[in-house]
Length: 113
Image (cartoon, rainbow, N blue to C red; front, top):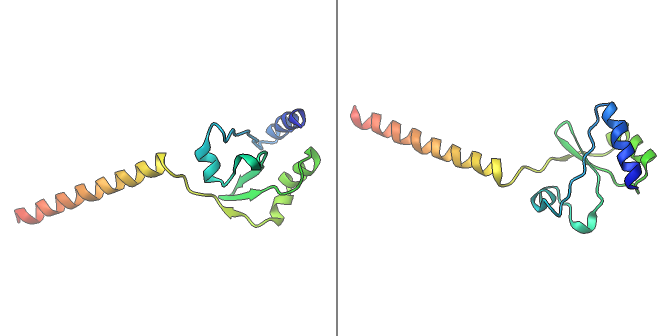
């Protein structure tokens, strides 16, 4: 299967479809974000038009290629799970600090008048 996968990645790259391997053992947060457990591996997920599509068939290159090309359209896309931690947490912290700063500035201006 690995050889077929590598060949398919090259073929799809020529069509500007990017396939990637993700080691959820090395990135547990990514596995948690997309609801993929170690016992689910291998798992194929397509991210397209801000939605997540799950390939649910037994894997073979021909069926997978057909699904990538048009089969995914028959599936209901799921919302892409938001990031947790990292950028999302930093954004929330920055927004809160900006609110506090703006509140302090408005309070100071109101006090000085």
